[in-house]
Length: 368
Ligand SMILES: Nc1ncnc2c1ncn2[C@@H]1O[C@H](COP(=O)(O)OP(=O)(O)OP(=O)(O)O)[C@@H](O)[C@H]1O
Image 1: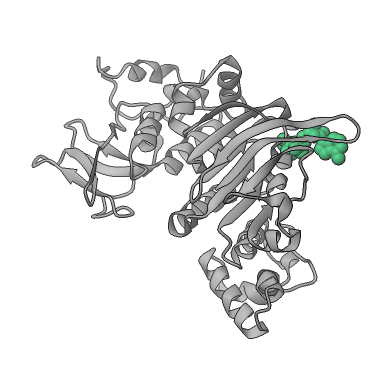
Image 2 (image 1 turned 120 degrees about the horizontal axis):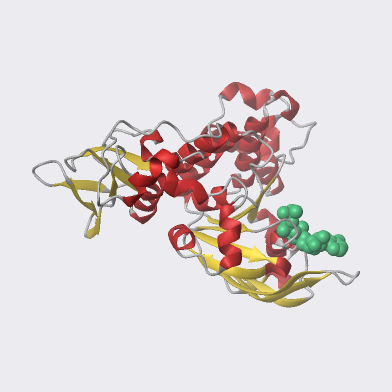
């Protein structure tokens, strides 16, 4: 666990980058810092690996003040991924990834074997290992950056806008990959972005910051979207590519995945008619939130995905029978696509209004 106790940074020129942050970052989860440019996100992140030394307060890593830990050892135990990957241009990909294991004293063969394993883990084909960074695409370079950060199997991963330099499609793929990796590895991830969509997509918890690293709201994505703390947060949520249009856009644009027997250990219990009842995992049992692609909005789909313990919204037909699932990522991606084209996707064929679904009334106005 990372704890910020009144951690502040005041620069010699008088600029207060961070005023006095009180924040707990829980172990094994993804916490996303999001906020406008200059609000102190990078400063906060770098306080953890001592690239920035607080001028007041302190940062604790598993109870130990990082100021008292040797910087080199501390940094080797913390993965750090930055924009543009920050790879060594003159080293082959495999040796970029093997850097930290080599620093830890592993022999070259073992370090390279570990690097090869990691390249596979982040989805890079084996032939990329022998190339130099400049011979890879931007998205591939970011994957190498992630592999390198994971090389020493650090419990903590700091990620500073790692995906912001790549185009939206590649970015969506990288986000998907990170979600998959995190489900597998359960690192303590502190992730910085200025993109609220990315924050909502990746974060178990989202910290919305305003100037001087002050917390405007700390919440899970669902609470953030449905109950912004104040008008500033609401305005921030609605800005950029915004989530404002969610309630106006039909959920029919979300691609559905077929129902599987198990999703990360969660099983969907259906009634005899095939209608979803619960998500079940061992002794755990939670309601299965649903949406109807033929008449609901993207907002309903996103709510369902955010509320489901499996992270999957269950799509139902007009009779309420389960017909597929949609992940949080798939819903956000559908939103991004509809915004890129500037118009909402065509409403699905089902013009009748349903009294239970007020969003359906708004569908014909979407895109205006
Ligand atoms: N060396 C420095 N001297 C003076 N001010 C600085 C210095 N480094 C950063 N700052 C200021 O501290 C504030 C916080 O910077 P920081 O880089 O943490 O913001 P950020 O939220 O990460 O911004 P961005 O999203 O643009 O990367 C900014 O106002 C910045 O100008």
